[in-house]
Image 1 (cartoon, rainbow, N blue to C red):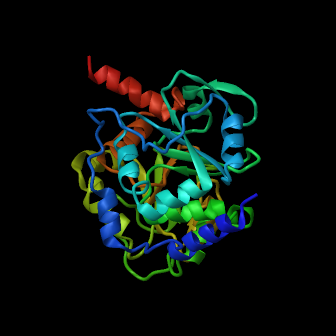
Image 2: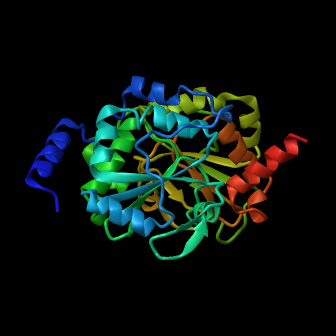
Length: 347
């Protein structure tokens, strides 16, 4: 139980803390994108307030709750991950975010390549690597939030700018996950987030409407990637003027069927599984909250994977290569496949 003083402190933090922040703060997004996404030369250092796991997340959770925390979140990362470094340098280094985390969570770090054993809240024991595979942490950093009872209540994949990470924290702490999807919470908290006027980035590799992507009756002859974007989207602009303006990436995209949809539009689509609906309805069904989001489908219309966080050149190129080589058919774990490719290239 929190004391009255603790409640007052928490209330003060909430009142001073922006609910979401400006989704169109170009400086904030530019700072988040301002890094090179190659592997780090030196291993990453975690903040000193990260907790070492006892080896059993149930015990870690008990300790957090005993100290008045809402629960824990597990940070899945890599020691030479540039996205992890940027997350620590931006989101975790933002004073109000750090304070809010310390008020409400203990943070447990897991190396997705680690061999140490760790027991999940369901009582099953895994190596760090196998636990990471279990939760599909294809992109690091990935976060899983546990409530006080050990239930996994939300997962955030990849690196997001501070305003969106701040929103995810509040979404969990205030238990909005009990009544709405994060997408709906974000749209409600930031009015007009998904419904702003503005054109999309026109690119030659996008197919023209009508958007009939049905693969339920007849297989496609190549993979499908759907870009979910919106008007006045600075992150979308940075994607198209940055990594997706590179010739190697364009070459990979031209091996796919590429469709661009405005997540706020009433444009009619036929989805890969044959359903007829509007773009905004499909985006809602898929739970898309980040723009741009890229979803990849195989020739049968089955989703392979998605990129729904900040992505730069090397990560984008790696994913496109993985899809076009159909590597997912023999190696469903993207990170393991990427590791094998690095070993081959270093020979």
